[in-house]
Image (cartoon, rainbow, N blue to C red; front, side):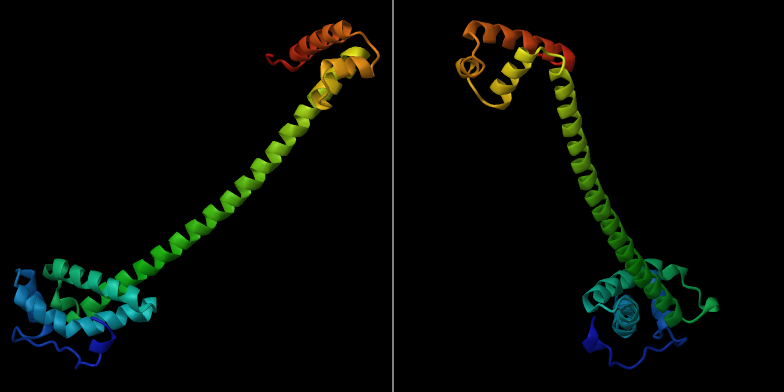
Length: 198
């Protein structure tokens, strides 16, 4: 089924069993030969109908195959009193093609929405991280302000300045033992203030 088969003569409806209505009735009873003949006659019309709706040859090919399968499965439901066989099959094909377009549009909409949500979530995560960092810094600063000057200087120089205890003692002109004690006491007070274990 495809573009090359569209130039065949239009299928006909006749009452002698060889027309489309007759082939449909025979197909409904499981006559595979009748369905093969029906397929040969209507597949160009089915493909053309799908292509007009979808406008993508490969997608139209898939939809045409689905429509022909549906025609085979639903052949027993065809009622010639309600319209011609060709119109009935064209309706099935058109419905399948419209469903495919709607499904593709829904998928595109879902993908776009998911993309927007992911971007918004990423932005939200960055903002949350920045806020948490700022709050942590403020909590630490507030807790540091509760220490004595010597404790605060010792802790700040050791942990933020990267100095060893001996260097802190030298820079503050304070005995090393005093610095170690102030540092220990300062860390205990910080731990209690921040509510974390050390």
